[in-house]
Length: 258
Ligand SMILES: [Zn+2]
Image (cartoon, rainbow, N blue to C red; front, side, top):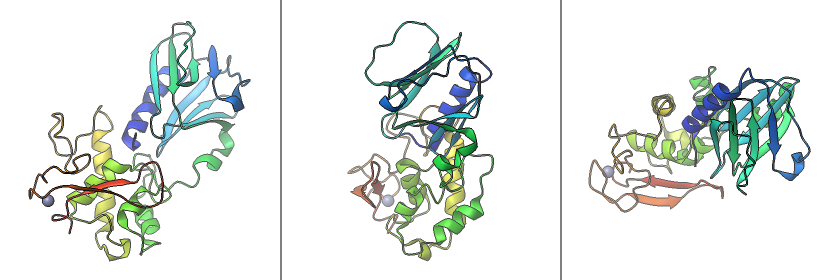
């Protein structure tokens, strides 16, 4: 599941390949937009908002996409050849570059002036230019009885955290994912840590939290169920948490996060 840092990097790749150039190909492979044609229009920019991608095209048009579970955007040299992969949902290409979106969870075309209908519900974007830690804390605090592991994942509180950054931030602060938000004094510190971890990883492929980039060594608890805690040796636990969503699994050390 791509988290905010991956989406931020994807937006930058899309921006570098598409912004300022005229589309010579727009191939929507979702039924609703089968007849939509953006060729001849210039892409103005591509940005991320939390885990959402907004590709803006001249004429008050925004292509809104979301990677959800398995989606990806790949940028490569434009070939002009037909691409026949059934996972492709959208191709945007100019004379030089092509961007191919596969298994995208959301593909929709909206008015740029009405982007708020798609992303207006989001809390402060951890990697956005307008990141506002105080506002994120205010939103989290509004539901004091909610478990912190669930609250951190709610994109209406703060946008960009997924399972990995949730699990790792909570481990590093010694907080159980089930601890009610209202009992945590150090919310500002926790939010700031999540922001720093995402920021530290946004420029690189692969998410390293421990400081050790070796395979299998990058995280403290995420993806390590049944293995010994790197601090205390206790077996790392894994459980589902929160509403039934695509990404509710959480990892924690019952000793360090008691
Ligand atoms: Zn431990």
